[in-house]
Length: 106
Length: 113
Image (cartoon, rainbow over all chains, first blue to last red; front, side, top):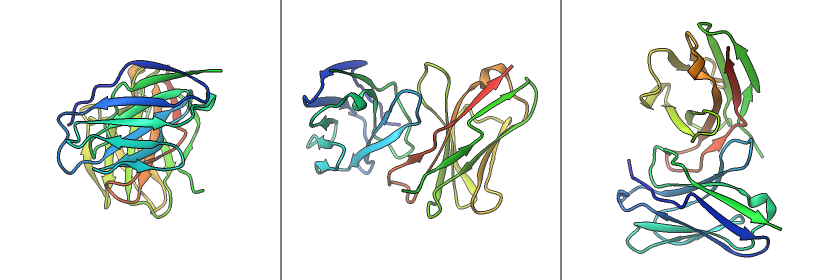
């Protein structure tokens, strides 16, 4: 299983961009990089995933390093509802790590 | 938008009793999963299920656990003889393909007394 390193916590102000980093230096060549988040008292929720190219959807953008050893989840304008634990998962088995707890301040 | 539904939302059982947690995955999904999350801890993978058989399981998923897809719509997790340490939120999830996004239910909170 690929190992990940994410900061334990990050803070942002509302309506500011947030860049959530993840290192996954042992990722295999064929595994997608998935990002999920877990809002308080809810189940995990899919955010975005990608393989090599940067990806955009209505929730976020995913920037993947050329060597695929790291990626960054970008929330373009954080809202209070984005306060959650964000998980970077670079393997097909979807093994969750400890994630990054994002706090958003008004 | 289709959802993964789990019942019950909260289950209380006595130690040593059998419990069955129920899930209805999204109808066109083919891959099914169970995870658990002990209060304050991370989400832990238990088992994945595809084509009517277990495809992977974790060390947590020992002989006390079993999964079943009895009728083509439900996906159940059975714990044969519950222990206090089985108290946790149990999440069911499903997806269409092995690399597509995973859809989670809202979970069943299991309390073993």
